[in-house]
Image (tube, rainbow, N blue to C red; front, side, top):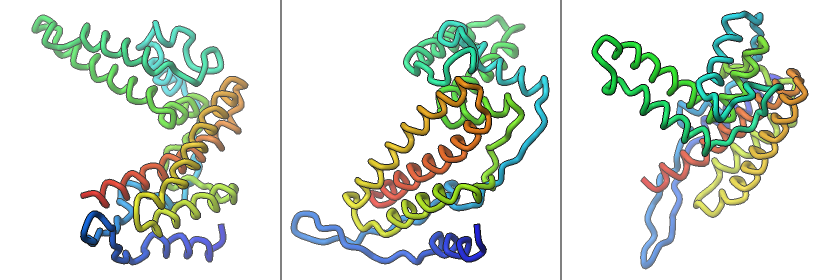
Length: 234
């Protein structure tokens, strides 16, 4: 990305909020314009970091799947699908949490039960979220795309779409203005997850890496829309 493009992105992220009026009933009330929250750094430049594959990384990722032998009997892709039955995963997670609850264990096993409960929680949170799941599966292949500064410079289309969505949210003056942005972003999210299913099934790490970076941006756009709505209604 050119220096000029980066300046445009930075300027957009610092755009001064303008007051807006929302009509309701007999009066118009001023509504504060939400800022991009610090936890959603939509336009920080990503940088793809590659780390060498290690047995430890493989074991760690495989163990996430091994926590749920009924729901994820086939293991991670390509032997098993990228897509997960979230309802079944949730049911197995709750059964496991109940079985390993520290309060149900004798004193000498409480510490081990607490550690197991923590591991199960971590595995569930990771595998239930398509973005986190994709990032872990790529780490299994020695690729780290979790850094906020991952490099998306080679995907000009991604940056153009993301900037347009960012500006649309920034320009919104009422929730109805975000309906088209949300609908289109939801479509991109669903399509990206389907494409990740195909990429992992084919063991195509290069395609999965590109798609995971895109999914990261679509998730951030969704979070920005939700942050706008939350702050607008507060």
